Image (cartoon, rainbow, N blue to C red; front, side, top):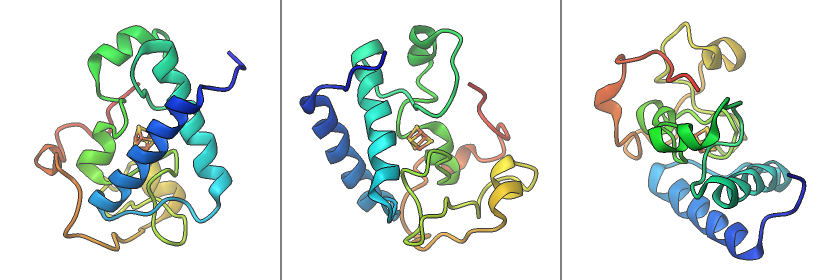
Length: 137
Ligand code: SF4
């Protein structure tokens, strides 16, 4: 699907992203283009499956995945570890927060240790840390 998502869905996702960044103590990427691409992917999924499914994974069955909810933005990984592999919710420098990830997680291997600039915010599902190293798509 190469069509651009509707302005309505794009706007909905921009608003959501801005609000969630504020609430979770993260930032939108300093390069606006990065954010635009992710927002567009999320908005496209609203049109395809009715939910803002994470655009940075491959799903054999998007409808089935949407029902599981684990990769609906903000995904389990964000709510548990405050890690966004799409780079939608990052530090002011544009890096994903990796501080809370298990050490063998690919995010730690790629980016090293990236500290949370606002440990007092976000991680609504932090009690689930350690339950699964990484929720698989
Ligand atoms: S990784 Fe999670 S928080 Fe980041 S864009 Fe995808 S679903 Fe949203």
